[in-house]
Image 1 (tube, one colour):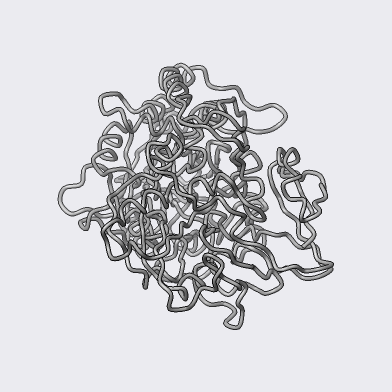
Image 2 (cartoon, one colour):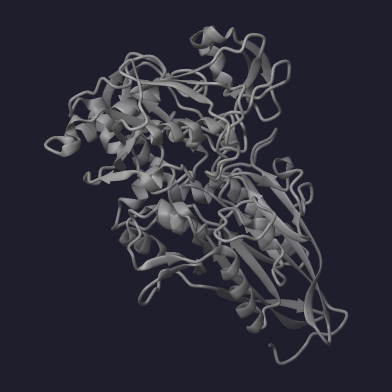
Length: 620
């Protein structure tokens, strides 16, 4: 504790600024389409940062700037920065230029080789904090906590304010990134870790405690191993402000309306101010705290408020010139690399209708996976087994907004198109399993759809289920009955035991038997338990050499490897007819140019909503 206490009448304002889930969206630019994109980019967020900082300092407030993780991976410029060991990392330089006070880590930040991550974070201009990820031996890459001391002038004399910082990531990160994390890395549960860190920071005499929590809003109740733990986290006494993230949603905002203990309009959770600033630099989170003092208790929070400041709107902020200059070389090099031609497509590849019709881009990725696995199976006991390939859309709108779809015109395929079709740095895996497991897999995947009720206004896709968990199993054909409620919930538990949405599962025209065995090509995220699919614990891993899926896709498109016919037929899934029923598909506005592709649903364009999504009414 400090040796002297401030006078009873003293008041101090603290402004906390926050970014989260940047995913290396540094410029206001879409590298997949090679075009400017004004709704994203740290260069525009930086202008909001400078404005918000100047406002607060003009009023004598202390200003702190934090990043909440998942900053290092997600765009081609991020891949370039990670591949240049002899060059300063551009994001670390940007964090220095913008005077960040501390940065937390997110699950995707562990998607690098550990040496690469250590090298990048060693360049951080401020403390890197990650409280619940542990490493054996001396860990100098990140700290468990940080204590910042800031001076403020009150009535002609200086007072010290100490701010304690801790940071947490989902414990599931250990599974999701198991191919990158050695056995000497383990991750503690969020809530017990937070309790411990708050206790330690309070014992250090911190006046304010801030949680950099790379986790979203989920269960209202405390439970072990929560992935999205913000609500019970906010109930922990001693936390004064929380920076949330991971789910790419926003708070304050309507996306969390109706949740228990959450005032979505104000951003208060259990009375604690929380901000979640979307993704890709689309928002700046702002929390203002008013601290007052008493002789007995020292500083305490007397008032607080949260807000989000968007970069999109009628008058978006300009790109910050200093950051544009900083990123200039990397930006130009990335664009040059992204333009490398690697193949050709006769079809326009897009993901506007991934949830109702064949996605030809997905089919290409599925074929690339199958082709790579086929080569690895030669001479093994599994060579004679039927081969399937599982792939989910990676750009499907949803929380990332109406611009977030693949849209690749027919013609030359370039490296940026490879990244567009599979944006995550996943590696190829293969498993052996039974027809019974396949059925469970498809049932879990079909949980992305809402139950369709005749005569009701039905939205096709449940916005609370992640689109990247809609696995399509190429090599099969199957029917989904949308009149039936989903069998599994989002956590992989059986919610409706009598529900079986998926039927008529066939391979090569023959019904799949429960005991029939298959090899399935898939990515490491799914193979390691990502998405809570129920078959994982029983699947038998097949040892295939590590291969980035983007590399397999490049080889497939360039003709460097033999082509695989899997994926060339019709869409693997279809919906059981529901005469008189319809469903609303929310998709990107450019889908209107391809509407003839879903003529079987007699589509009707129903305008665009406030977010910019095109509404298409489908007859089932």
